[in-house]
Length: 426
Image (cartoon, rainbow, N blue to C red):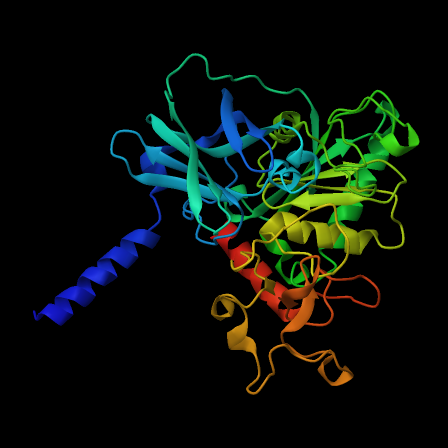
């Protein structure tokens, strides 16, 4: 074997090892370990403090696709076998703390948010490492914790709640499993919640490509009634005692409804096998929000556009699709200059080769003029990611940009959604 052949063989071995997946049964039981922690800091700093380790009864994730290869998100959890040092699980995500860091408040004070990461329950001790993406787009280690899997301090409590099946298609390990959580429904509103869950599922699966891939999804719901109907609306001096303590005016943005009580969100969701959490908020006020691999939430009071709201927010939750519109937000410097956004549907042209450049028809100008001729064409149209300059989207119309007269995702978003479905269900 000559040196050139040897070099190419070694490169192939290294590349194969870097993308090889883990044998589930070698390292894991078919249940979940959850690590709860606090992420604290301000606009420039963050620190992480452990809360507790919990055992949950189900593992709904893939048993063959255990290493995250999508590259989405600003945060990642990595799980290493403590004895051998092998990486045996990883998953990327975003969080509410990261959004808060971009607000004016974060420049003036420090704050803590509850968070949690989940992974299959290890058979042997593991080292859990949490990393954050820096302003250069590189992941840096922020925290590590050695888990003794035999510790009697690992909590095994179960939540006694009522659950229901909305859509069942496949074994959870071969499906995208969505759990819907009730929020702000009074004890006598069970039937209304059940109907709203059906409405959510009908909405999601009325749009392509979810419609064509419905047989790869499960949807379950968890019922936990509130003391009073509705959610908090601070601007109207409305306060209600609910299971998840959701509130409008998140980051002082009127329509942004979220909850800071992520610990309770995860505990409530653990009653069923799940991959993704979506909260159905019983309020007539229009609003919602969603964060990649964290949770989504929408109010039931948007009758004219509820289906598009659900599918738009689910795009954020499922694969981190970026908003493609321009406009004012409460965020500052949301996308670092000189770093290609990780979201698959926007670009600042720093590394456009990794985006949809290969889909452009030959001779497509960059940027692409926003003309009637290009109304349905794939191009590079300026204005996306909350910015009117320097950020680009692939189409003039898409459900991640606007709802008016738009009934579909653009081809770039559609392709990314299908690839994400494959990652969850392989």
